[in-house]
Length: 337
Image 1: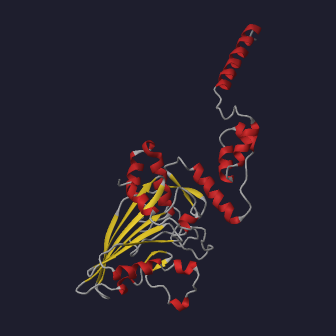
Image 2 (image 1 turned 30 degrees about the vertical axis):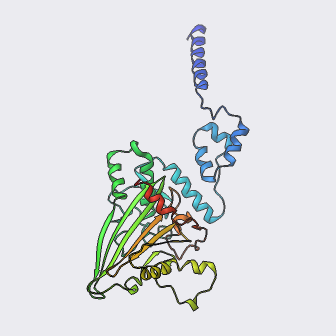
Image 3 (image 1 turned 90 degrees about the vertical axis):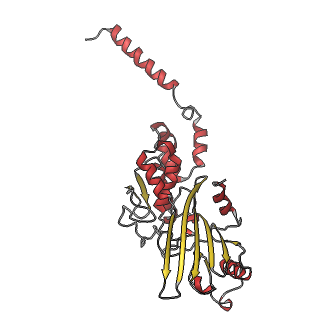
């Protein structure tokens, strides 16, 4: 049996460790409980649940938290929670279809889309891809945006294979299309992603040419620069005169102005998503440039993303109002400067 002196020495040694650990407690844990609760009241449900996982003391103070009962808000908050927990996990991405983590496949890019979840295909309810004009040679999924933004933020902490994957996710894509059986139309396109200030930006440059003939508006009759802007919208008598419907004619107006002023670059924007675009017409070609702001490292239910991706199963998006023409184009160009 140990003597009383030895036992007393052990107790004093343990007490010294406790005192040392207490002195090294974080400043947050030394704050008054009322102040901690005031801070957590300002957090979203997802952030509050993540905050509660930091340590036992915080969990005992603020509780475990819970998601809202509304179905739409619940799903968005659950995704934000998973994304937050996955924030520093370079080998995983969060699937918005099954609401789980999946391991990355470094061959899965917007050029060769192959998600590691069988539910996350182009027919999924939430995982609708974005396809810039023209054609379907580039299919950008929300997971590509999610991973590219995460890897860029993690920076020097990435392993070489993750850096290589980031380069593939943000690589430019250039291709050509031809339609000799129709109008002998030749189309060249270049798509260039860029991450600026934690936002995923996308620029598309397209040229339409027709051999041996001057170009006409009909060459791009089926094209649109975003889900809201088409070259030839329905006839005026099918449209109401309210501001919403008139805003859907911005691309149509820009194309007309471009044909009336050959060689001049006509700039415009879409009021219903974060898109700037320009049209330049000569006798030989029609050149269209599009700048898109696809948002930050957030849920695929974020209006900034959903405004570009249509799904018949989800309610239409009307929260996005783009009232700063040229902002996206300037932000994209700022990285070059």
